[in-house]
Image 1: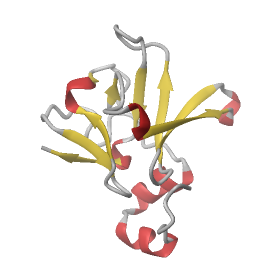
Image 2 (image 1 turned 135 degrees about the horizontal axis):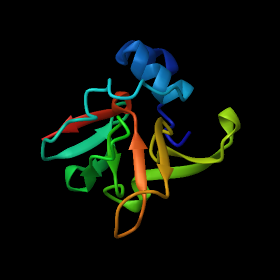
Image 3 (image 1 turned 30 degrees about the vertical axis):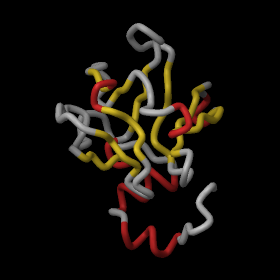
Image 4 (image 1 turned 90 degrees about the vertical axis):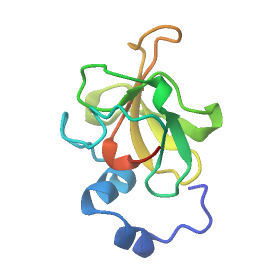
Length: 129
């Protein structure tokens, strides 16, 4: 955890149970249920836990997966990546680089130019126009 001010009790009180489960317990919201999977506003998606800017709407696209999908974070240092072998799969987990909140995963099946799909839980995001 990179946030020296992290307080689990305060965070539990500030987040919904679903947000806490996703961000702090690495849960995944069901596909096609999150508030941002079909969202088309112009702005920036921030970490719901710490407010760190994570993804710009210009990098969002419809992957058909049922989760918000982005081609890249708004800045390389906004997210961190970690090897995830849970559920018998080899995946790359994406976390907020500031507070270590679980965001989702990145896959090598996205569109050009980089071929990446950042598949992010809506519950981990807060949109600001």
